[in-house]
Length: 384
Ligand SMILES: NC(=O)c1ccc[n+]([C@@H]2O[C@H](COP(=O)([O-])OP(=O)(O)OC[C@H]3O[C@@H](n4cnc5c(N)ncnc54)[C@H](O)[C@@H]3O)[C@@H](O)[C@H]2O)c1
Ligand SMILES: [Fe+2]
Image (cartoon, rainbow, N blue to C red; front, side, top):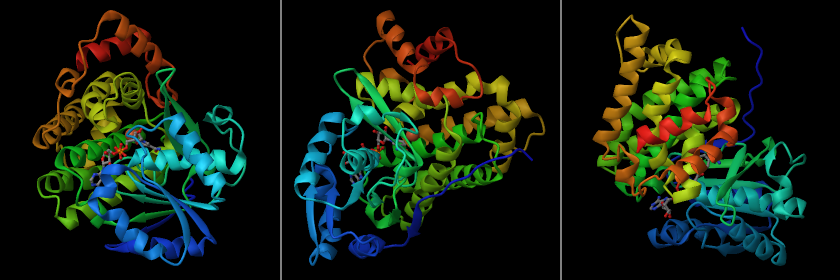
């Protein structure tokens, strides 16, 4: 067996209605003045209000204006607010945009200085303030991951922060919070989780039995429940399976990395604002096809283990996994080409710029096959 290291720094708790006890979790972490982060659409759902009831006997300040694909300006603004209010813990209620913002705010709040000093991998070397992550989408895995991304809008790119100290202290998984997520976002975030599982299963350092088990089971759970969660948002069992699957895939990828599909999605998101899950669902089959010769056996094994193929021929079983992903996306109403997802026509300059961003994205380091600039350009052209 290959040597490996496996981390799960986050305490993971799951239960229907669990989020209403978030304040108690904060108290257990010795938080006395919480910074609560969320976004405007979530405020309208009533989810946040319900959680805030538990904070009635605690001091807190709320910032409810985190934008989708949050940015450095938002982080600096929130960090100033938290400093002036002397907050000693953070609660993130939302999807990946809110959770990632909370993680980067935590860096500024705990360590001070300029946010850009800490970007990249392992530039944070000490414990941060307690952070409780309450995901309201089932997709990003940010509630357990050791990474966060926010946009540098001026530079037109996404900045990555990676350190084991970024993993939230507690992940509060309450499927009732995901009921209000509209079908398209349910499907798109579900495909983000599936992309984590598939890319993590084939990433270059994906050699641990722990990550393999998480990838296999989460892939199976997503195939079995995403259609139901998308079709009937009130199906609590499907919502529960999706939420837990996305956290499992999050634990997997944060230990083993992702790959070219994420590098493409990050770059497209930085340039055109395409939702991360939508970008992933379009790029995933193309990325898998590109990686096919390097990891045919791995795709074939995954395909059989999750019930997508009975073929003993690896090439057939691997192709059947890609076909099954295509069918899942179509059944969930997801766009299959970038042009159908609001991406404007890609001119050669755009493709050059995107290829440069993709080639320098940290996710690509973990891809099982080398990607040349020409390979990357070809992927954009095929996906368009
Ligand atoms: N740190 C990580 O490990 C990691 C991994 C993958 C993605 N990400 C990041 O996560 C971000 C995407 O996150 P996301 O896909 O969760 O989307 P999001 O957080 O951007 O949310 C999308 C929209 O859905 C709404 N929403 C969220 N939950 C809802 C609910 N329950 N009911 C109704 N509306 C709801 C939000 O208000 C928002 O308008 C990207 O910035 C991406 O880079 C981070
Ligand atoms: Fe992702």
